[in-house]
Length: 122
Image (cartoon, rainbow, N blue to C red; front, side, top):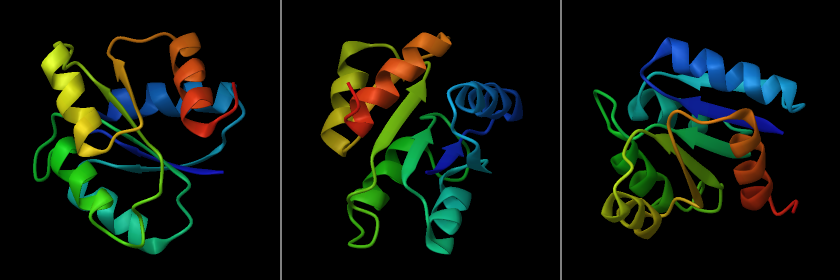
């Protein structure tokens, strides 16, 4: 399984990548913002997207809406990992097409649980 991690923080990308590796997901590609993320998607083979909300160039919500509006990528599961914790933010993200939502900071257990939910591996 190839996972795309989109976050403008290199530290957060490293934390997510290391956590994914511990969970057995080693095929991980990174992008700093939504524009880079779309370029990585177009390269092909992405099975899951983990994205931040607050990023320069193209924010996570716009990125999610762009993915959902594309015939090629519309069915790729998306997990948003962000500091945006208000209920209305979560609802907006879900309405925009994210499959699940994690508020930073998060534990490896939370990431594992949400990944299992998104990938249907309860």
